[in-house]
Image 1 (tube, helix red, strand yellow):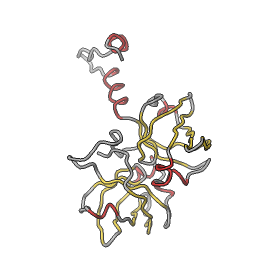
Image 2 (cartoon, rainbow, N blue to C red; image 1 turned 30 degrees about the vertical axis):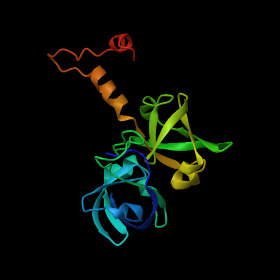
Image 3 (cartoon, one colour; image 1 turned 135 degrees about the horizontal axis):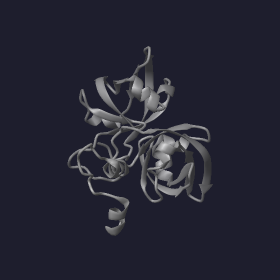
Image 4 (cartoon, one colour; image 1 turned 120 degrees about the vertical axis):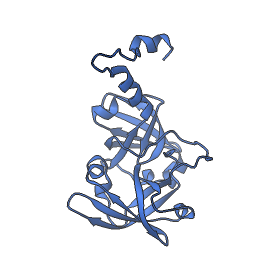
Length: 215
């Protein structure tokens, strides 16, 4: 599990492509203070497993499903990437629950400055947009952000100078692809509301039940 608080921006050093998979070699600094074989590293929002490491580089296998769901297939040697180690049990929870299992990609349709802030508007498929709510959480390329505005086809976030400087989001421009992970709580609620097995009673969680409970 991750928090969406990016620890550093690393650099892709090598991409070895297979028939429908790839192996990434990524260079970093901070994450090597405590790294082991089998560790989970969040790379642009995607949870990858460390298969080997040496010096200040580590390798990770990227399977076909991950390439289809994310923008990792577009990475080339020299690409900057957001990096975060899995959350320590005694760590501070500065962002929100980020699993590193992204739901898909979105496209930046607008970037505008607002005094010291930068607004990014991202369009996404209906299957992703249905879980996005104003003032809710969203992970963009592994960055925990608060949704500021929502329409039927896109949503907007406003980032501070620190986020722009310490992550790759500050380098993004209109037309760029970003990895998106919805807040997992919304997906669990939806599953419970619609779950029913033949011959068994439903969970009893309905829209009426939630409204009465104050949700």
